[in-house]
Length: 216
Image (cartoon, rainbow, N blue to C red; front, top):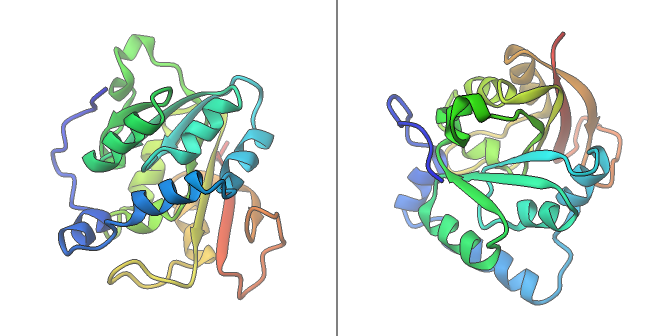
């Protein structure tokens, strides 16, 4: 599946870093962890618990497919979105049951998923694994707005990212910044945790896990 035209889509931090030779070990690392039987399903367990059965879920920035595939295995209808063609190829080879749309997140519209008249909004949009940190500079609100437009009326966005470590040349992205950008994108924070063990957020927490709804 392919998506819309990339006009006026700036290069994101993942693309810029990969051009410098960074991030090439990401797909290999997670493949090795899966082969070793390591538990890398924390995000999927959280989203599964949050969702109705047979939910329609968008995995935004699906990478090599581990989160989306784990949700498919739990009985959900999942579509991944990924721009990196190497990761798409890895995902399709390892997890053929996970459908993947090739697109930048900023380019997504209902037409990205087929004829507009056939588009079914998503119950949950998942953007975890630091995906938001790899967006092009100053496009966080734009990306969240785009994803929010794909939600069903009671749909939710699950957003997870580290807060202290930067990606490439970007500064740390605090929970407060993340919440402010979500608010600017027309979203309301329903839950805020410090990680997938659902710890209460504290000022020095190194992870922000937000569950967002469209503001009424």
